[in-house]
Length: 335
Image 1 (cartoon, helix red, strand yellow):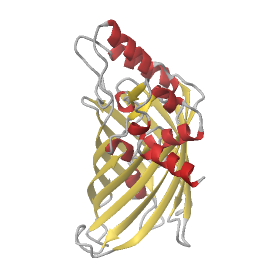
Image 2: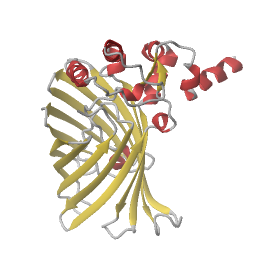
Image 3: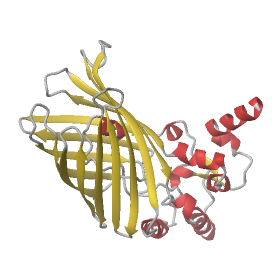
Image 4: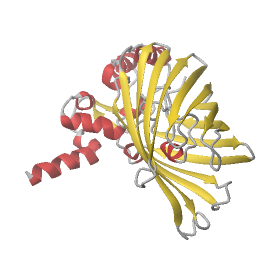
């Protein structure tokens, strides 16, 4: 039993080697669609996500975010970086049949490929310390909008290349050949097909920790005001252009003052921008808080998000108005 267990662990951690004997190898990262980019988990931990009702979609393998948040009397810049460890260590080479398998190993592998780690850094404008830092971990447990799992996109791409006499890319290549072959129509069709999966629910969850530094962020002088946050979120497609969202967060989970935040939201998608609106109940101030955001797609796998929400005040019972602007770059197949 111990030998069998180590064999399973080895297969998960070394997917390229495990699948080298298969005839249907693909590189998963050729098929990352430009759809539904979720929030950075480190920013969720810092309460610096654009909205508090989060997306349930699968993350992109890499994402970098710069932001500026404003509340009455304070303007705070920040940045975050998210990366999937599976992507970082070159684990995208998979057997297509193995990736699609509904065995325990197949399901765990799909969860592993959609797990990201995240770090964020924001100046502390409250005077409590020089910096606020955040670290997060996020994964997608159920993703029926995965084009490799639930569409024939890999097969269609292979057929299109073969018809044009283009040799298939090497397993390690994350980019598809472009010499004389236009694959944009196939990817557009896959995006439409994944968006149209009405009734399917994407389910994701995460954990994050935030803290204030005692000195410079790299001097190791210690952290204080550490807060742990856990969350679970679902995203249900009610149509090709309309999603319903639900999120539950446990704030400051390991202290006696832990609180619960729950919320519902909607997302309306268009070809150039996505619009979201939410209503959340915050157990810290026992109030309902509205929020809205627009996510505009820009060239080069980038997007800009502008949001406006209310949140609990730090020193008063009255809610405060918070605005935020984010600029994000992410790894995907962008048209």
